[in-house]
Image (tube, rainbow, N blue to C red; front, side, top):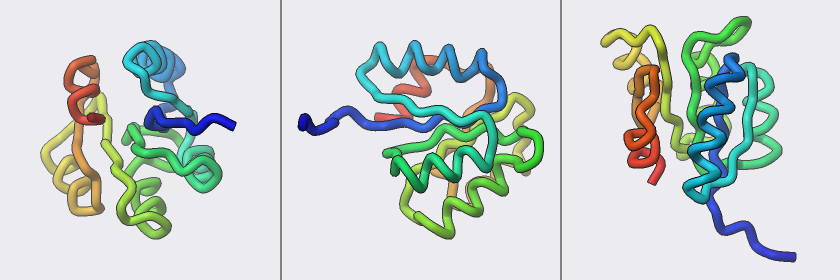
Length: 119
């Protein structure tokens, strides 16, 4: 069995278009990608697949990204989580950082910024 050496990135966003565009960029750049359309699905995938990093949307129905981040930190305080928002505010960015986010990016995502952050 071959070892998977490419980093696994979990993209969590309720918008299929965002997940799809990130899939194209990440796979082209040599990353493996997993995706989740909701907070609960993200937590299940993290438990099952242990990604190397998470790109996590803040605004999602049922369970928002800050709630997901809080749950991630309980189980894995060292997993790098990058918060993503189309409605970013300074207070949201500060709260995400306080909760343990590695970084905060605003939509629309810039390809080079995403790749720099993940590397």
